[in-house]
Length: 238
Picture 1 (spheres, rainbow, N blue to C red):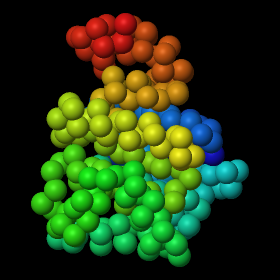
Picture 2 (picture 1 turned 120 degrees about the vertical axis):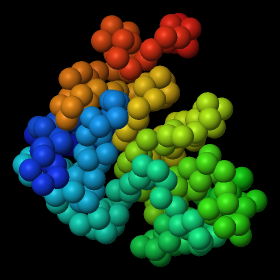
Picture 3 (picture 1 turned 180 degrees about the vertical axis):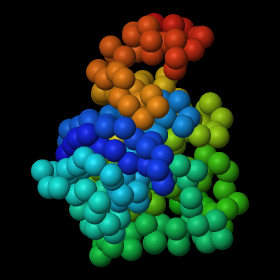
């Protein structure tokens, strides 16, 4: 569904993404892990057209979409849930969902379907979004994206700033998306959680892919354990 080849991009004269190549097959959850500042967000922005690539290509369903405007990507079923949630804080939950489906002619039906999966949001649909808890705001950001009926969902750090129990709930939601037919490309610093639900993974270090493979293999890799999984990893996974 998604193939990136030798992608390079950055800001001004600073190259942030340095020749990245990866792919995401239909029906997969693929994760990209890496430290803060590794270039993960910049890569996502280049995929959806927010950051013009300097070199390389982005292919969606076999169609070259390098540098395609964001609105056109949404029309093709590619939707980004940005880092920091970026909900419309002064608007209600319902209005946030309406905006998420602005290019979907069946958005009223889509909103009802989404609220079936997010009963907490249904209880708060007339509440101002900025008054929600952090976890509820993250749920709203994901729900808003789903109203657009994405085929490929790009998630940027969905666990950021959330308590451990809320992180678990959010990742359970992400894992359930696969059953709904949504392909997911998950960018995360929380390597334990990401590798726990994904099929395959890539490690991004200072703009370059340094490791890739099945998540089970990556979880046993000594370099990944040392750099990203930390103490307590054995207890969590084995």
